[in-house]
Image 1 (cartoon, helix red, strand yellow):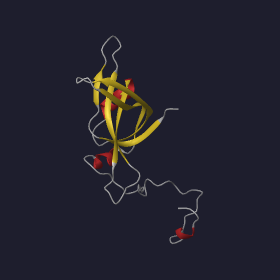
Image 2 (image 1 turned 90 degrees about the horizontal axis):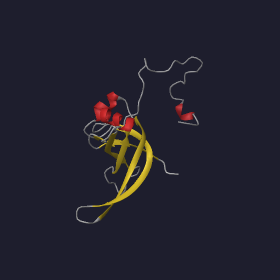
Image 3 (image 1 turned 180 degrees about the vertical axis):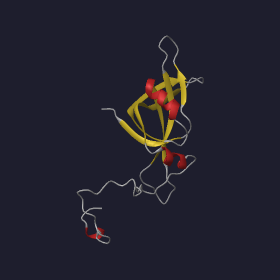
Image 4 (image 1 turned 30 degrees about the vertical axis):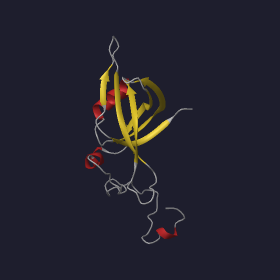
Length: 150
């Protein structure tokens, strides 16, 4: 099975091209900066830069919304290849062929984060956004420590 799911921010705007011929199709190339889960020896947060390519409607989506700094979740497959460059050397490539893409955060959060960094504050709904408590008992303050889950 060859399946990849990544979440990261675009390092620059997606690059869009259209194939030639009767049934021209969009092709988008972009790079996702995917944070590594763990830090080593008190280093700064490190990231892997994953080359991605998408086709058709997915590429058209990236053309419209794929701007530097926007956070996406992509699903696809790894594809390797090779070519001979102008110096006659063999160059090996690895890309994620993106089959599905979704926004990983709201537009307002994304607007606040463009240009670097990301908000590590957890989302807390305002009282107007909170779900109604019908059928559920309110937990009194100070009892959270006694709950078997958090």
